Length: 239
Image 1 (cartoon, rainbow, N blue to C red):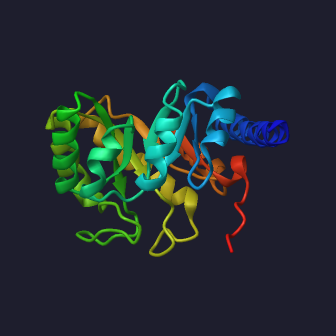
Image 2 (cartoon, rainbow, N blue to C red; image 1 turned 120 degrees about the horizontal axis):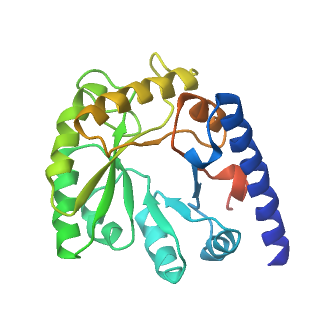
């Protein structure tokens, strides 16, 4: 276990250096950017090590993996983010452990999250997932609402009992006008965040950037970056 702790500590130090350098280049304070470690496919033992190393935010994208892991780590001082596409039949489980759901992209999901948050007497933070590869009325390939749908959905979240509108999230698109243009995509998200905050000033979280493009996200103004492989390594294929 000490070998794994050494490995994760070294990886975290490299990621921390990247974030700090990106903040310096952008003229930003390092404290403005929160690292979320994406622990999907990795065991609860890794989550425990990360907590020992000072990580406070972790993310998962599949409830069947996340629920038992969160239960096994319930004694740790962690903030759990759910970042995957979420079906309504998984909402009851997810609300049991997720402090924030970053993939809110339709009113039906908002209604389900609200009902369950009230039932469990929890407040769940919500980010609107923005699909920059969507047409004006379509959803993105990996979920998300088109920019034109943000205002209506945000208002719906803000009025929903048990939910808190925290901001916006995106994944750099693989198709469309922003394909291969991560910084332009993240700058577009920042513009959309500015628009959102006119109506909802407290919704100031902007989650963007992953292992390969966190520098572009920081340069654009992201408040949170979601990093998996750069911290945990590339998981070997099974079989």
